[in-house]
Figure 1 (cartoon, rainbow, N blue to C red):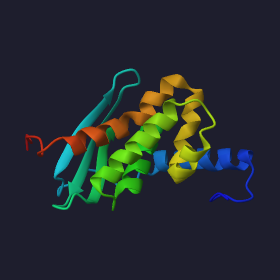
Figure 2 (spheres, rainbow, N blue to C red; figure 1 turned 60 degrees about the vertical axis):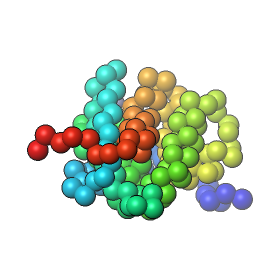
Figure 3 (tube, protein in one colour; figure 1 turned 90 degrees about the horizontal axis):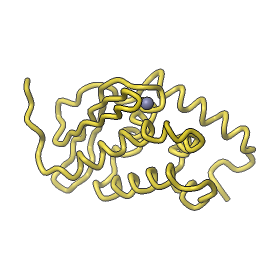
Figure 4 (cartoon, helix red, strand yellow; figure 1 turned 180 degrees about the vertical axis):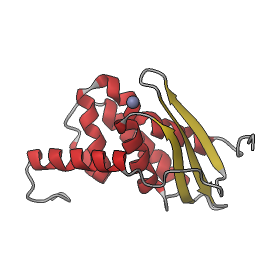
Length: 159
Ligand code: ZN
């Protein structure tokens, strides 16, 4: 059993391509989050991707809201958009577990079915495994997520 019962792998690939393009063209939760309690920057000099991720985390450690701003290639923007969609409502520790799932999935050899099923629509990002130079684009926002969660206070703001 899987969540895409009956679909061929070609159909899935097309679906994922559409999902990536859709998130790249219309990123979700794009912009500065004024209520942010955590934030971190992610820079990928190889491609020129640069983004800042914002999290609003409550006292119990639940991520109430998330947003990002910055600029980069389609993969980096789509990945950040998918990230914000997938972590809002999670506890910090579950978001960190997702970080592990996504980053290890993108750097693992193909065929880790268990992990793929757990990723749900984040499987869309697995296509970049065929393009090693793109893996850093896809994982950039996730590294920013880990940095944001691990820091203890909101960084100094210049405005
Ligand atoms: Zn990139």
